[in-house]
Length: 374
Image 1: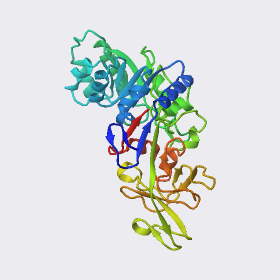
Image 2: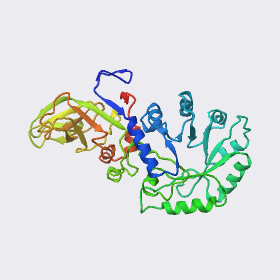
Image 3: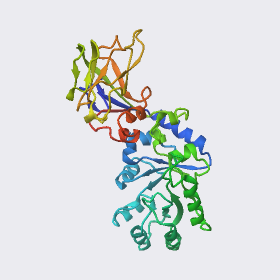
Image 4: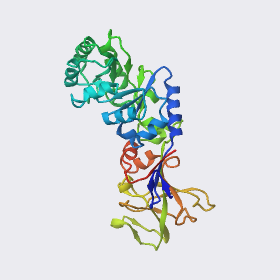
């Protein structure tokens, strides 16, 4: 593949990040929630897609929501002047001055953070926006309902610009407790009379609970064209596009006799004479080692009529390679292009065959894989 992403590439593997797909997905979210402002959630280096690609593709968002203050610094260094939200607030009191200098909004979810903010004297000349987090049933971060109003009044009295926030535990499921309805009821009863903008909806709520959005929504996984439920069929009609495509090539073809085995442990046994394709991609690239036989791989122009074809994994994924069954791909050859996930093979489908979710796969793309931003 030659030179790409400022690397000298000698393995035919490449992750392509489509910033136009980012723009499309952001516009789709605006269509679903036209009255809400959008925090584009880009924690974990934009879910493995990279901050540079996120800035290029999502610059029309109303703000970026992230975890690490170093990432906030990166955005300011790269001329982003919009709002930045620290989703877990401050981890250490010493970060507060830096967060203020970077003009970050901050989530407040515990007593220690509250005390740091109460004792801080703001000499920055600009207001500090806080998103006070209510634990409405997720039981992860946030103030319990009986603690929340006192926390709000203390921070409001200290001069901060207040916002109300909570997080849904089961917006992607209908039969789990706490339900979205129960959490919304808890949220609304707790903040009654405390006038401030609100932030509730994650990706699943934006897709399936548009009566529970808030003034600020926080789309994460849907920005990347991946399903909140882990099942691609659930978003197949959502008009979202995958942003990341992981591609490689067939680097070897083996001719097997009936009964021959493939790979470590000999997991796959040839049921007949057949061909096996060896692909330059393995778990050291971020492909899941636990992918079972049958996990789909798209092969370009390898079908009987030189059409594109999907071939199943056959044998254990190893560090640098995986192997596929070429019985439906008579025209596959060394150099045939393959897609591991992207527009042809949803990452959610690969994840389901590997006992995980699409979130994990895109976040786990290995640093050794060259990335092209287009």
